[in-house]
Amino acid sequence: MFPSIRRSAAIVSAALLTGVTLTACGGSSSSEGLLASIESGAVTVGTKYDQPGLGLRNPDGTMTGLDVDVAQYVVDHIAEANGWEQPSVDWRETPSAQRETLIQNGEVDMIAATYSINEGRSESVNFGGPYLLTHQALLVQEDNTEIDGLESLDGKILCSVTGSTPAQKVKDALPGVQLQEYDTYSSCVEALRQGNIDAMTTDATILHGYSAQAPGQFRVVEMEQDGEPFTNEYYGIGLAKGDAEGTEAVNEALTELHESGEFDALVEKNLGGTEGVTPGNPGDLSFLDE
Image (cartoon, rainbow, N blue to C red; front, top):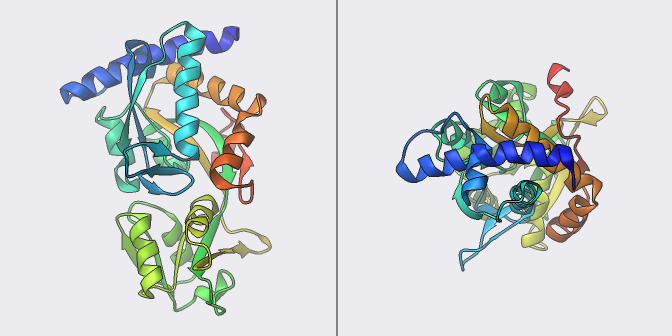
């Protein structure tokens, strides 16, 4: 059906098989990469468990969110393109600070978890994508009228997640900001609800999800610097370093996701609109050189 996708998917499947098998045994990932796991019929995919609209584990154990749907599409598309049975997916929680380690240890075959591609991370893992572009923003209490952008954060208590880069970027721009870090974004949201912090910062996609989950409690504040978005965050799918065949297959699946129109449908389904979300260009990592 899609010759190039079939070829890449075959490679990705071989890689995935290896990763899942060794994960079950508690070993490290195999040199075969992502494709082997898909072909084996069992894939371990890392995502967030506490991000409404992106990666959320429901009380009944099911998973919902844009990252979840994108990852499922990639796995299913690769399997179908190669004529393999649809594999089962074992979802694994992947906190921001643990993502590279979980991939390097072979505990997951791939990660879709609001995983911004940057130069430092690219030294440790391969990235498929990007599949979307978003920007760093702020979440504040609905009745907070003091914070209206980057400069108004000076002297305020700002929360983000350990292992994530947004808070440090603000600190670098405004040394007077007081940083408070937690293990999860949901802990930041609770601290904001209780009034223990003034704002939390991360990608606009994540913040819109939390705002939509609690109508009337929070609002999202955009941040700019010199008239431009404060940051550009390109979301990718992480997989084992050096797995070129798996990366190619993921990119071909993501390309089909965009060209088919399914990506827009998934954004609408999970985020209620495209605010703060721009489709990415899978395979184009030229922004790392900017």
